[in-house]
Image (cartoon, rainbow, N blue to C red):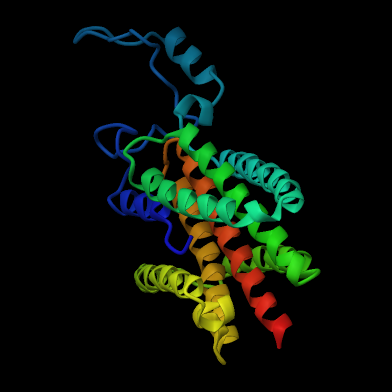
Length: 291
């Protein structure tokens, strides 16, 4: 997916100083972890104060953790990301074997997974609530998409799937290290530029899909031209930078005290970017295999 409305939504809320429906009215954030809490239902009157024993009991309590404050942690995002990634892999593997036995069903499943996941990504991203069932369905659809695409490409370009998988994982690790060490910068300006370019690339992909169905470029559409590999390489670069934007968005959400339920959205966004990067590598290596 070339544009991720999930992270656009999270970044917008973070830039406004808080998250809708979360935290107190003063600052929009939950109380600091470790701060003592007033017992539920206790409201001192004008002439009433806490006794020494009550104060001692309050400060003796264990520091409030994420479960008590309801705030997002990095562990939450990692767990949800791995869970959704596992759903994609299982769905993709099942589709691989199913389409491998019935190749004529590859294209219908491919298109259903692609357009279905694309439509759902915008529904999830612009929804006011975190809809976990829709996020799970999206992961299944992405699995259908990459499973059908992978087995089809691998039948024509033997070994291209393995190469694309290795390149995707290596790029993920490299982008994370580069972002973490500050070599790859993500700024408000770069986010805006990336968003506009990515949206333009999404439109290009849809136009190219139509062109390929009409027989242009031997079924590759615009990618079938002399500089098709260069366009595919640009797609890889865009998808790679999308990961850096995702990493930065997760970091901002954790530091900003986002609700714990946002871990589903963040995991969904990261997996979507990984799938996008894999598809771009698959296309690039397939084009290069032809030359």
